[in-house]
Image (spheres, rainbow, N blue to C red):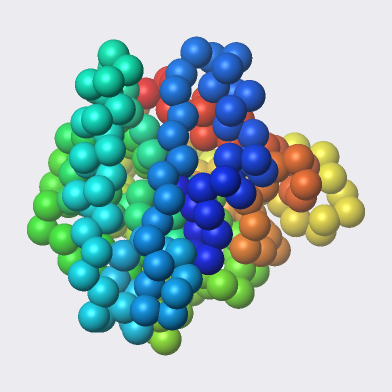
Length: 233
């Protein structure tokens, strides 16, 4: 599980609830810590504008970490998943294009892609993807942000549905449990002809730059939804 820009591993471990989910379902969860960028801020090197001189290879770091954890803890290398928030969500997409064979599925939350990720020639291997994004996000805007090289969410979803050959689409709306937030969640489920290689998008209409859980958007808990998606792959 990958933290966001300026955040840290300790914070997301305590706020996202994955430890409790892991204990209930008998899986291991790891919270890597990113390095600092040229401004001294914790980050993952995914190709944002302003990071052109950064040389840290976070893809190699995560690959090394996975191999080490699998080897030392007798884990199942065929069932490794990655999720992340914001900059960590970008990193999920980068890992899936560079090292798709390492992962069973990914789940970027309030993240997108840069052109450095999108233009990867390695993105030819299907991998299940679940994304969660808000239409009113001002940090990672739904329509993209050229100032930091963030692609529109529709572009990212189309990228993955094309890579996964997911031509079958079903749409449903989650129950609007919390009427006070003035938002609804529309879920788009893309899959191939055999209902595999799924690409799901949880579109939070009027949703902002926040991980939906116990504190906000109580229509669903992102961490629980992500684990449900992962375990069914």
